[in-house]
Amino acid sequence: MSARGERESMKPLSVEPTASRLAGFSLVFLMLGLSFSPLISTVSATSSSITTFSGGNSTETVLGNTTVDIALERNTTIMESSFELQYLSSNPSPGIVQMDIGNDSLLEWSFGGNRYGELGSQTRFSTNGSTTSSMPTQNTWSPIWSFDLPSEADVDMAELNVTYAPVMGGGMVATGGSIDDMAVADVDNDGEAEVVILDRDKDPGNGSHPHVGIIDWTLTSGFSSISWVWTCAGGTELMTGDANSDSRMDVYLLDEQNGSVCLHLANSTGFAPFTNISLTSPGSLGDVYVDDIDADGYSDLIYSTSNGNLCSTLRRSGGYSTLFVNVTVPSNSSGMGGPGGTSTTISDILAVNLWSGVKTAAVAEDMEGYVSFWNFSTNQQGGFAWVISMINATDLEDNIQAVDIDGDGDDDLFGDAPMSGTTMSVFTAGGGYQSTQSMSFFANEPVFADWDGSGTMTALLIDSGTSDGSDVTFTGDIDVHSVSASGIASSSTPLIELEPITAPTRMIIEDISFHMPADGAAYITDNTKYHNFFNGSECERVHLVSTLLEPRQTESEKMQQELEPIND
Image (cartoon, rainbow, N blue to C red):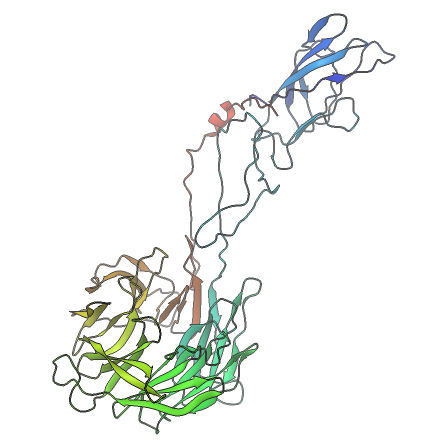
C-alpha cells in the first residue's frame, strides 16, 4: 500500500566533531515496511542540502529496529531537517513510529501511543484510552473527552462505535410463588424506586402466610434477594406513603374484611412488623386512599364506609389519631348536577391536585356517574371538617385515575362511565370539569405515562393474549395510544406495539417499568434511554443494532487512500 506519510519539521541540531570523517544519524523505526526520504540543510563553509543516505540512496526501507545513516562533514551545523514517511503494510496502520538520532534513547520524533493512536489511524481519546465513557445528565449528553489530532491533519475517514450501559439494569426476578399485588416506592430513601410485592400464600418453611417483599437494585450489585416480612392475614391491596415523615415510603395493606389497615414502617433493613389501624366495623370498609391531606408531611388515611360516609384519620408524630373526621356524602339521584337526597353508596375515592395547598378528595357514587369534591379544612372551632366544593364531574363511576392529560399542572380524571364505556374529564381552573364519554371498552385498566420521555402523555393498554404457560410461545403485547380531552385514541390503531414479555398482566410505570407475568416473576427495565431491549423469554433471540456512518471504503479504495502530510 502506498500512502503519504507524516511530515515533521525538526529544530536546529548541533553535531559535535568526531574522530571519523563521517558522523552517523541513527533513525530507528519500530514497525515493519517503512520507507522515508531525508531532506537536511546544513551549514559549514558553504550551505548545502543532503537528500541521500550514506549509501547513496534517496530512500531507505526500515524493517523493524533498523539503523540508517546520513553522511555529514566535520564541524557541520544542521539548520533544518525534514523527512517524508511512506509505509507498505497490509494493516491500516504500521503502529507506533519513532526516531532516535544517535542511539541515545532520546527520541527526536515519535508518533503513536498516548492520546494519538497509531500512525495513520487515530484510535485513542484525549483520556489516553482506546475506549471512554461519560454519563448523560437529564437526557443531555456532554462528553468530557475529545480527540487529539496532529496539526494540519486531514481526516479522510472516521468511524465511531457507540454503545451504552443503562444505569438501571433489567432482568427477571424469581419470587418463589405468586404475586397478588405490587407497587413501586422509594422505601430506603436512595432516590430510586424499589419494587414492593404481596404474596398471600408465601411459605417460608413453616406453612403459608401472607408476606410483603422488597426487590432492590443497585449499580454495583444488581438485583438483591427479596427481603420478606410477615404481614396481616386479611391484607389484599398494597398502598404506599410516608407515615412518619422520614423520607422513606412505608407500606399499607387494605384489610377490608376486618375494617382496618395494617402498616409496615420502612427502616434501614426493610420493613418493621406491621401495626394494625382499625378504621371501622368489620365488613363495612369501602375504598381506602393514602395521602397527606392536611399538608403536614405525614400521610393520612382517607376511606369510605358502606353507609355512604367519607372519613379520614390523621397521622401525627405519635401515630394515627383516634379522632375520625366523617361526613355523609349525599346522593345525586336527581341528576341535576348537585348533591341532594339521602346518602349514597361510594364506589371510589382518590385525592387530586386542583389548587395549591391541601389535596381535594374526589368521591364517586355507585351507578350514578357523579363525582363530588371535598376539601379538608380547619373549622372555626379549631377542629377539622370536610367541606364540599362547588364543582363536580359527571359520567364517571369507578376505577378512576388522576392524570394530567392537558399538561396544565392540575389533575384530570379518567374512569369507567355508567353502564358502559369510559369517560375523560378535563379540569380547567375557570370552567371546572368537562366530561367526554366514549363507548371504548378496555379489558385491562389503562396506564397513563410519558413512556418514551418525549414529553407527551400516552395510554398503554395491556393485551395479555392467550397464555399457555410457556415463555417459548410469545403471546400478548402492550399497545401505546395517543390521548386527548376526548379520551384514548382508537384501540385498533396503536402508535406502537411493545412486546417486553410474554403474557403481560399488569404494568406500573414510574421512571422504570414493571411487568407481572403469569409465572409469578416481576420484570423491571429502564425505558428512559434512547435505546433499550430485554429478552423476557426463555427462548434465545438475536437483537441487532446498527448505526449508519459515512459510506464505507472498499479494500481497494483503502489501498489507494493517501495520508496527508502532518506537521507537529
